[in-house]
Image (tube, rainbow, N blue to C red; front, side, top):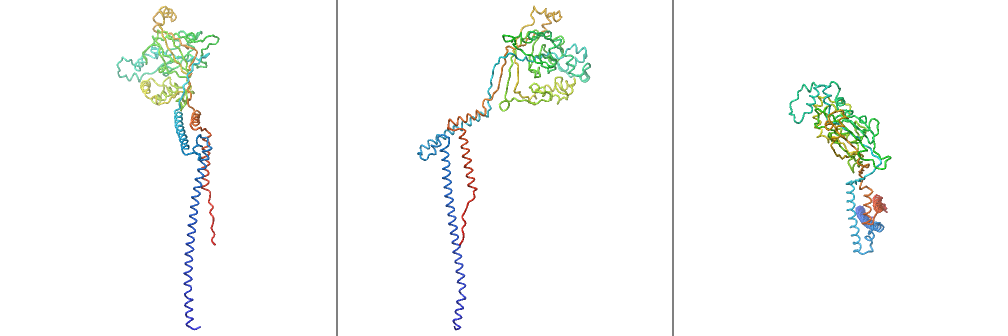
Length: 515
């Protein structure tokens, strides 16, 4: 081969690698394009699969709902979901079901609102009994202290001090001499409690005659106590280990009610001993109460004047109330008493108020605080006692759920008659026939009949009745019941479980292998 041919062959060999490189790039381009088309095909297939899966799920959901409607115990639902029925018929049954559901919702709201109002029925019943407990009878003289006794032992300074404490309405107010207030001291007694116990009207002098049913009684059957009204005496107190008296018809063929089967008292109010005090009237203040109660004579007692024969007919009422939310009754722990009554709570409230303001307590108040001195009474107790009337809401004294109250009906006659006046004067060892009319009075306290009234508060609309009304409405309007609610709950739980399971279930995609 000559040199010329050799050079031409070398040129041809040198150009072949360039052609081979261009061919490789072209092959790579077509391969990438093919892979992109394959990816698009796979994406399109996946999208098509998802659409098919969505359609399948939709068809499956419709099938599940339709199957539930066909088997549901709600009347009419099977006609709504029946695909074989015509559209007008299905619409008619849909309207019926929706109307029943609307009325059901209205009835449910109405029943729930009624239940949340917590209505109460009051049942009143008259019960005739073989025996009844007789209440405690507390009598208090309207005069606070016996003037003659007080002046004799404590001196005239005590009388002047009472005049300063309790001025008459007709008297013109004038500055009180400071020396009388500051220098006054009790000489024969230690405190105001002892003062009342010694110079108040004593039961031995007040109770002249006493009869309990057919038996005689006396001042020994009375318990002396200090109340907000002063020194008082209580018959049938239930204290000192004695059981409360009862009125019964044991051994009798008729009801033992009326004046002959109660308490009869002849009382001397000792008007000759009256002096200056918080009250300007003459007579007795009487409180009739349960043995457990503290007699609030000032607020709850009624007055009886001398020269009268007063007949007091009693009726007993037992009240059973309901606590929150149906009522307001409840109990409360007291500081000075073991059991709860409204009167004890009110007295304890007043005690806290006075002790907080004055640092001392009055004779009728509970607790171990020191007794108020006469100066404390004048400077602090009396002014704050009037102010307390505007602060009674500072203490909560709820009504107890179980309580017994006594109502009384009073009638009067003149006492004594002209014929009997002389006889009673002899009984009192007083030759003045008018003395008994100015000082004497007769009381007859008795049950009008041997029966009592029971007032019972009862829940009118209980939770079970609420469910019964809702169930009755469901059965009437939709033909449904409690089982229907369980069916709906079961259906909802199963479908929720299926959806969650299908959502979190891992997908299995085929792996393509490259050849």
